[in-house]
Amino acid sequence: MVADAHVGEDSSSLARFQAMLSALEQWECPLVFLGDIMELWIGLPGFQSPIQASFLAWCRRESRRRRILFLEGNHEFFVFSEHGSSFSGGGEEFFRESGVYLTHGDQIAASSSHLWFRRWSKGRLARLLLRFLPFSRGIVRFLKRQLEAQGRRRPRFFPSQAIVAWGKSMKEASPPPRAMLMGHFHRSFQLRFSDGTLLAALPAWKDRGEVALYFPRQNRLLFRHWRDLPPHLPKPDGPPQPTPKPKNKYGQEHPAS
Image 1: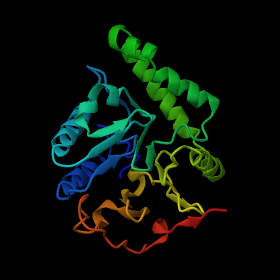
Image 2 (image 1 turned 135 degrees about the vertical axis):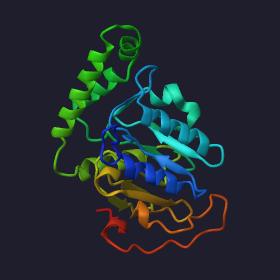
Image 3 (image 1 turned 45 degrees about the vertical axis):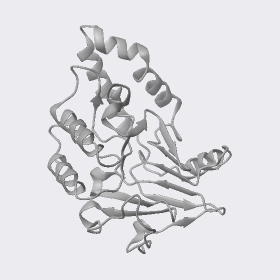
């Protein structure tokens, strides 16, 4: 799983991101891109950059031999609705399968202004304005300024209490999820409820190149730098694999209070 890469055309991380994609081609396990993979990605015709088109082509090619899931982040607009066929599955807000709930996470512990901006920027009116009006480039510049402002207003504290409260509310669903995984907060976090349900946030790839390994049979999540991944990841239909022990604090779990 990869979250919050925030790759752009002039990004210093572009070469590292492309190197990671090349490395991931040697494995057969499913891949999940958990949102904000690109710094600003508008999936409508005429707006995509070359690196975004290249990433879509990579996902189409890889999805022919293994599952590729894509969840939109708050920096991505109309990507899944326009290019869903490039992936094996995913969604604009969440994806749920086999008891695992995936979401980018920006609607958790969000301010009312963020929720309003999200509804507007991903709604039908914004889509129409971007596609058909001559001043659509100005709208894109507005979106970029808003996203940059949101980034500057990002709270320095981690809203763990709000995330745990959200996780408890999600556990009331029928059937309840066994794992709830998100990105967005740019910080690794794991919590295990007393019934074994896992609640976790992934670190931002753009900060240290970390990705997450999820083992569904054991319902375990480990964080590693992508260059430190084991040479042979388990196949999706293979026998149960032993769960590696965490080597550092990023792989440890925190008990629920």
